[in-house]
Image (cartoon, rainbow, N blue to C red):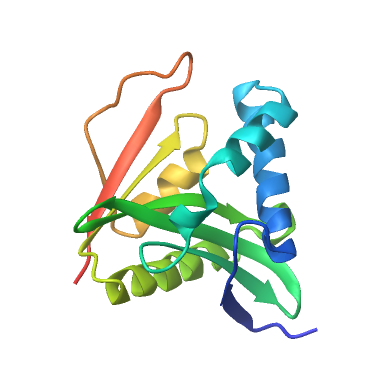
Length: 159
């Protein structure tokens, strides 16, 4: 198996995206206390076309043929893309894959003509907060709570 990370664009229903969605459902369920099937429906309920060109993309990072990281972006407004579904396989964390994914997504975002990136993560994901801060994202003012979840927003200007 190759040890070089390669990125491919996929559709939300592509089998390569399944590990991303499945592990996110488990992780979000454990961290936020929602039933896994409800989280899975919520993840898959986002319009898949929003993550498709020309306004978005869903990208999976592969080591050989194994999906190990992935994420998506969609249009937030005319100049801003919104990151969604950022994931790294639990067996492959702390190896720089998420940072490589952000670099790849940001390059694709710039090629689509966006000049800014926006995202939200949950307050029970300190690893995500640390990743975005280390990649130059600025934390924004607090957002209103969604039940007992407190969204944490970040933004970054791109060249």
